[in-house]
Length: 171
Image (cartoon, rainbow, N blue to C red):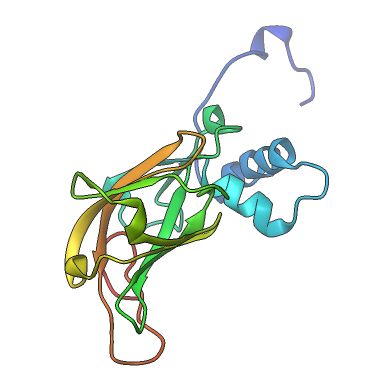
């Protein structure tokens, strides 16, 4: 700025929109990047740094805003739920951890025998009593990071199940 005065520096103002979000997200990506990370690795880390805002509904893909204080914590993120052909519940997302953690549904911790498989991006649960219901799922990974939210568990007779998003609507 031409003829700028030093007294003008250090003041803060509030701006919003994609023009303001792009540099913040770019900075977060630079902070999250570790040598050898794939784009999917960085994306999953970025999603885990979102502070959810339920009142936003489906106004943005992440359902919240970027929270730089969460960088490094890598909270688990459950993105989708669906039912398999053999009536098991599949959770897909990020940062579940390679080692098995714990899952509670509606406040009841599932026995380890009900967790059929566990990976960093999906979990398969044998709990058919929750199909066709809206439930509170709490997931804690082996690093003791946790997430808890409400999900709808639905299936279809088609080979590929329709998927419920976290708001309970069908995609």
